[in-house]
Length: 427
Ligand SMILES: Cc1ncc(COP(=O)(O)O)c(C=O)c1O
Image (cartoon, rainbow, N blue to C red):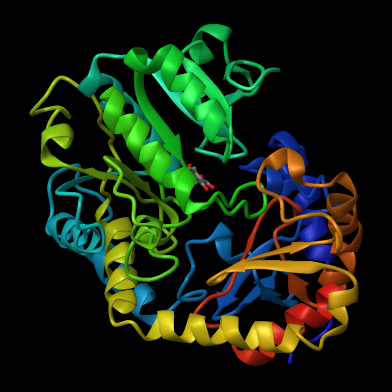
């Protein structure tokens, strides 16, 4: 049973210090708690389903480092593998034995891919995949969908302008219009817009990139028809289809979301779980495309820390544990337990929980249809999440500090924990 947190004086003192040294005191924006108010917590330790702050308060964690920790915090097999790898040397800047092992584990899960390259983050994986697609096709245009997040590379920070098919506008200061000029932003799930984009620009489109299960603006479940249409249009136009599985990959089974929707992309980008909590990203695809990468081909990509041995060791330990299957069976059972508890829970009169496998998104609107695009998300639902957030923390339950982010169940969560989540959300 989770206990109620007490003083957060040490977190507050750290934040005061950090805010004098770092913009908003953080290394990544959402961590600053701007949306939910108050000051961010400073976590110092993780144990299974719990994150423990500098003041010793224990929080039942459903953020789980934004997805990578599918085995829970500080899983012994992962910690052991990382410790052993670190003792052998932190970095070599050379080839090493962990690379082919993690490559085998990844390619086994994505059988339509034949080669993989390791990078350091999901952002880098996407940047590499887009460059590869442009190199492979000799074309420039990239199609993305409003509401999907693909990291913070310039071309991917395009936002939709007005109109159904829009040339991207910069979604951030510092991204020049020239960086997004070749990005077309389409509404998610809109077959007519997709057709129109291909009819008008088909011969110039290098790639379409999509999160097959968009999970960065809540959970925007797409129809199989839409995902299949992406494949049909890209194949017909000679463009590549990129599935950004940075969240999706290994989340629903020892495979990608591609297996669940029955669509095979040309390139897959991975991050989060593939690094088991350490910085690893990956791009996987067919040999003929992947071997365009330097040094075999003309598409450049490199990295001092790419394929770092300690990071890959964490990925290997994580994927080896996942491959056994028990974790996914446990997550399926947890999902069923959550549904069963929810059926009679007071939360039903306050919010809905959208769930795909172990990805859960609380939505504080009982009437509106399930959002399919980011624009469908009701401001009132967002306000309610943000307004309630401090209450959840006071009960010792930690969710992502933004209504647009999904929560994650892990191997370390129990049916009791799921009940605590529902109780907190209903409070
Ligand atoms: C689908 C998707 N792609 C790319 C990224 C970027 O990954 P990273 O934060 O590791 O750069 C994220 C991060 O949340 C993501 O969810």
